[in-house]
Image (cartoon, rainbow, N blue to C red):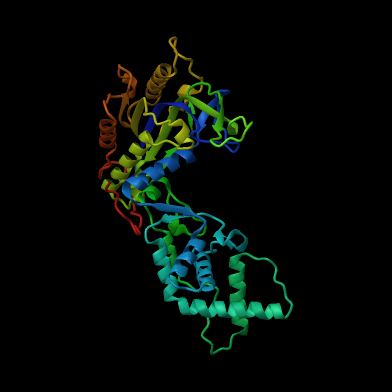
Length: 437
């Protein structure tokens, strides 16, 4: 098969944010980066992705769950179905133990949470895992009985087992059963009492956001999905100073002599014009959707809308930083993506009349022109932009008056066809719900 380069959809946004705290650090301060030897206000890729993921999931009513709480939640689900609590706990631990080649380690001290996060489709997750447990309830009950009996015998003998994780306890109890069980007894032969293939298939299910952002679960190759979205740190195009906000909360029932304040503190806020950048590997996205070109296009459309309109939501009720992008640009390229972040390596200076939007727009357009001069147009499939500025920015491509028209133009340029770069082998689709919202 001849070489076909990957196709990328680059997205660039300039957006002003008023005084806000959209993404906090460990000390509750706005996150910052040093770029070009000066401090900038910043938004981490993780905070942006979460806002985008939750919005896309809400739009589609197709939710994924990232959790360490699978065993406790499954145990509660089984208990609700009438299982004894001890058997429900044991079954849930067995699900974790059989989930991957090495098992998902859990800890009794952490409420039997898994040590790593599971990321999978939420729909029918607990019901389907519970059904597997129900199908093997007799084996689970027998294994639990022998494990409990052995623990009681050890206690009577004065033995005090060292603290272990759930996986080692399950393995040890299975080993003891193999050594002590009469040959005629109906008992499990290994510590894995549940069908690992069925459990793995459930955990490998995908959603739109898993196809977009990817997934990795150690020891379970079937769950691995290479992310199609690459998202950069957003940062202000200019120096980003932190602004202290001293505030008080009034006491509505003050005692005589009280100053009337129940709480006082100082919050740190920041404001500025952010440069945000993401690229979508359309070839990878098509592979993630099993070669379904139309579905890949739909997911690219959803991501574009989320990238334009979704922001991290920390402290939103007291800052309301609900602005719209001032300028957005797209470029569809083959072979490799190109960020315009170097446009702001030297922080922009405020305009003579004040404000950073106008000089930021100009810096973005100037760098786009330089990038085009350097790389040429041979691998540029299409480009375009929108802006609130009265005059279009020619270096950013054709001007589009609205977000909807901007997105439509980008998708037209990005369209993958049989002759354009596309995925080779189709990926298996498990438990998929098509994105139709």
